[in-house]
Amino acid sequence: MAVKDRDRFSTATRIRLLGEQTAARVYRSQTKRQARRSRLTGRAALLALVLCSLVVALAYPIRQYVSQRADIADMQRQKEEAAERVEKLRDTKARWQDDAYARQQIRQRLHYVLPGETGFIVIDPDAAKQSRTELGAADRPWYTNIWDGVDKADASDH
Image (cartoon, rainbow, N blue to C red; front, side):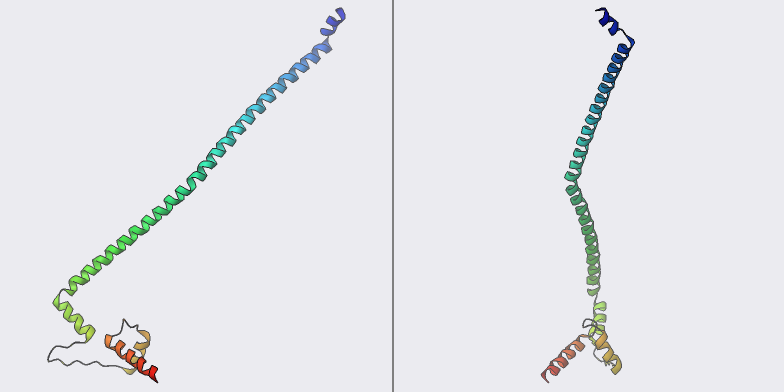
């Protein structure tokens, strides 16, 4: 036993034991760090998975919300335009209820004359040709549209 005890307390043995103990401590601390890292990595992966799931789950409702807000804004704009049209139509209706305005429009649009007046329509031949090609049916007097229809019907018979 004396050899064993002497061997046990020799410097080389002590250094070897000290090295083994240090290596074991380093290995244990590395294992703990790796475990801590892997645990944090697992937590980070879980957190990333949860966040991705939330983004995917909320993407469609958010898109719908934005789309509906755009539709609401468009409908409000249409409502305002309709209100403006209604106001213009009310003004027009009020003007037409005035007899003086109605007489003026009848004389201007239908070329009516009052009893005792003589009505003249002077037509420039070049302007008449030009007006038929440039003006639409709504821009010309009603009787011009009628005569154009008669001329077209007459031309199709030949």
